[in-house]
Length: 232
Image 1 (cartoon, rainbow, N blue to C red):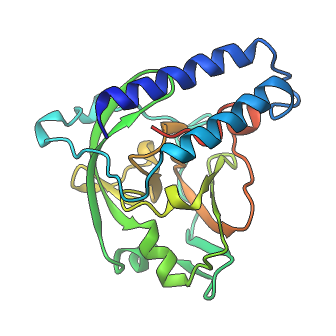
Image 2: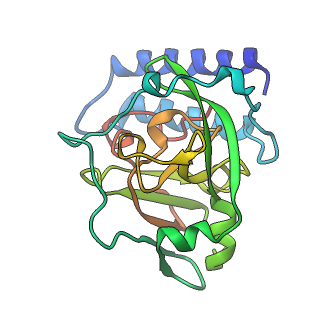
């Protein structure tokens, strides 16, 4: 996707968000003017999105030094995986199941090195490896009627929901590795969501659950008024 198009879209979205906050009811973030603008943004971004369009791969020289790639979590300290951690996959699927990390590693591996965009305005680059969500969807027999996918975590229940086309984009990965090494707790171990088609707050870390759903839910920040689609 051309950089100027991405920047133009982001400027429009940030501008719309700023305008919307002037009429925002924090107790009802999807009501009133903010709700109208969010639905407008969702329709506009959905129209611009194409499931076969790839975000550009960055050259290895663009890698952000590991210590400079920000670590975000909402718990008071770095969340650590509970004993016996597994990824629960369910909803509208033919074969719901819980995956250990080793079982996820046996699925086809996907590698990507795509620029990460944060809603706060910074960007960074890392190499990610893991299983593409589209491959996980095939493994569990996700129903085509599931138009949305919800992701939940053990970081105080942080969650987000995505439209299925974005979730099944070839560059949407459940990452268990970063920069050629196993994922560390500060970046979401043992498993985090990563994609080149969404802003950073949509990329749930510390994953516990993936659910394929017929309707959208919300998200930790989305429920507070952040944009739901949040494409880049």
